[in-house]
Image (tube, rainbow over all chains, first blue to last red; front, side):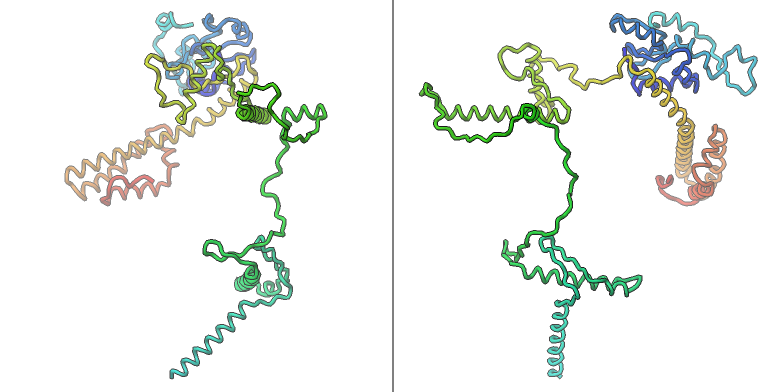
Length: 128
Length: 345
């Protein structure tokens, strides 16, 4: 387990900024506690300071997961965002969901994604 | 006629001589100060001539320089000369002017281990002579070579001093000496030590071990690359947060600029490709002037509509250069026959 390097942080932020834009700094700098990103086995976990200190007591090979997994770095160092990050990204999303479509002004951008409930089932083995 | 010319020649020669002598001797109110060791001549005469000259004293300056140089050369000719490899050379005296320091004053070095100890104990350097009556101790083995023994002892002392010098240097620069555990063959070394020693020996060639052959069944050493250093797990949380926010700020500030440049370049490249393709088509068909004029007219309309379609593209097109320049380029492309590559600036 280790913190992310400059390069890795940049790649990850660029990916996340496509979904939540400038609200990313609200994720980094949270008013109700210090949260940080840590890398473990190529996966990026978003974890509060308290949980991090507890997880540090577990040896690396026995540690499976900590906090929330936001995504992972592939073998070629590209960042893939996982659905487990949805809970944290949804409040800050730039583009409106289907429900808000009805109440939004005509110039807003709407993302229409048919369905990906399947991702939880498809990647059940690998999601942590 | 000849007599005239001879007389004239003689008179001319005499005049030249007189001029030369005049030139060699220079009259100065105050004598110059010479430092021949530095080839230096200092002129303390008041520069009245220069002041009279006005805003452009070029000629006066040149004359002054010539005079002073003449005086310096006169002095040099009076020095004792000698012959060095077929060249006549003057021997310069010691320089008398004291020049300032070339480099800054050296900073004081940290004391070596011995110096610290001596200072602590109050030991002063004591001179002792090397001469002894007879180094051979009384009950020595007659077969033992005392001279070889002396040379060996000196080698050991020299090596020990060198090691201490390097250690002092490392301490002064606050670095570490490379560890030599396992490199002294004692016969009681562990497997790891021997492995390390072998590795070091392999890398200690001029090519840093790149062309050393391995034994038939020897495997390549793994993990001999540079070890990466990461931030500590619980580093300073606030510092980490600050760095990330700074990174975000930089990312956000950079965003729009790149978009515009990329869009412009992309568009220009596409236009280039279109033009090249059309040109090739026209030349293949064989239609010369008329065809090209027509295609030139067409091209004027086409890319502009492309610029309108792209988001922010039309704005960027205007930024890339004044519209008049763009227009001239189009016209030039349509009218003249010219080789392909000579367009974009």
